[in-house]
Length: 378
Image (cartoon, rainbow, N blue to C red; front, side, top):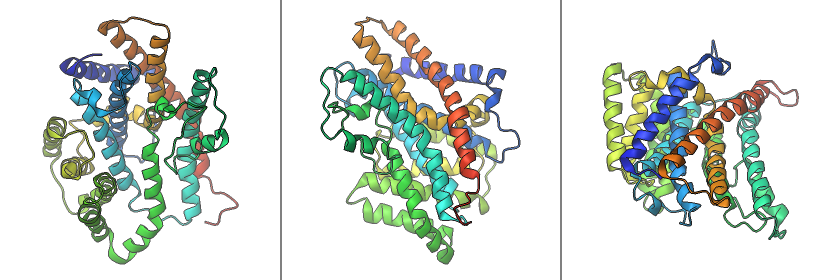
């Protein structure tokens, strides 16, 4: 495992390789000509998914070398510790930004589209976890509560529960336990009808500020983490309307974003603490105002991989777990250089697989969700 500055250099090298490989014509099938989507947000999605993958890279390495899945393993990799909070925080803000103004003609159709967007890759990830757990437990198989436990693994993330599989108590770590964030995504989606009703009465700005107030001053004293997540969605909603009243020169936005990134990766603790939310909030608002980190977020490779970010998010844990489990099972002894080269190869195989899962699984189901269902009134 690389240490500190070496890890930083490797991560930068990975991003450069991503830029070189995925901007080639081989991946032109990932382009969306004529799309009205905001390119810098697609590029942001990739960097967020990549950050979470690098966070779990350290967890997975130490876990499969006999250490517990706790933040203590980041003693020599503080950058990777902070990358996890960075990725999840901005993902939640991005959801708040995209859906804050939702007012669908049919809420049933809205939830159908959300299900078809979330469930297919979730089920693919769960199937891989179930099959791998079944293989690993083949000699000590426990069938008690098997059907009930399997139910939770195929709930599309709504319950946030991932029980043991076939007696494997830590089965949720096969995919790095990433499905917990979907519980909060669904909670946000289910709150939208109420938020939409209140927004029509008050306007979006008073609503967003009110939710922030409740999170910071009413929820945080009892549960910092829950307050933090609620506030993230509210910040995303706030960022949606800030550009209507404020305009900042792009170079100033980009310079401020770089400064904020330095602060975030220097002084935050790697925990979801409400005290650090202003840094992340200002960062996201500057991106909403047009900041793209001097063009970084608009790089063709990052925009393309941004489409595959959900696949990257749900499948990267399987890649790290499978790699480390194979090395351990075959008693392979790799030095730091060899392990890093293997990790690099695994990462790029993962990214290529994710472009294909987006193209052949995610994209068709999203198209299906956009169709008008004859049994749903619009």
